[in-house]
Amino acid sequence: MSNCINSGINKVYILTQFNSASLNRHLSRAYNFGNGLSFGDGYMEVLAATQTPGQAGKSWFQGTADAVRQFHWLFEVIEMTTVS
Image (cartoon, rainbow, N blue to C red; front, side):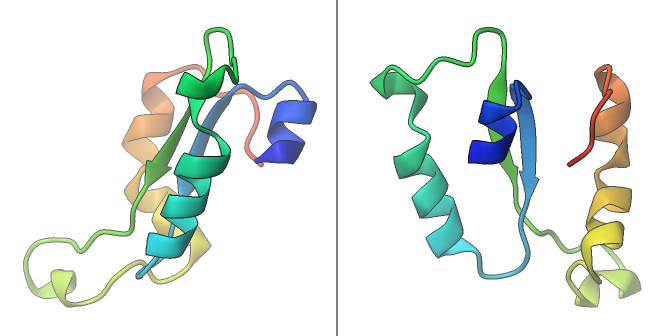
């Protein structure tokens, strides 16, 4: 996250795996935008691991590529120029 900020990447989605409560807590405390951390028109949003409906829904993300694949619709909505 700090590398993104220092590189001028101000629109950040963080994809997490199963049982990521401690990471989510750290991100909300360290990057609390209500405490004066400004991203201008940017944001940081955590996208938590999900299960899909039906028979395939018995498992979580099967790795980073699968997590990106399952959220591909979100990345297509905005103009993405960088993936870190």
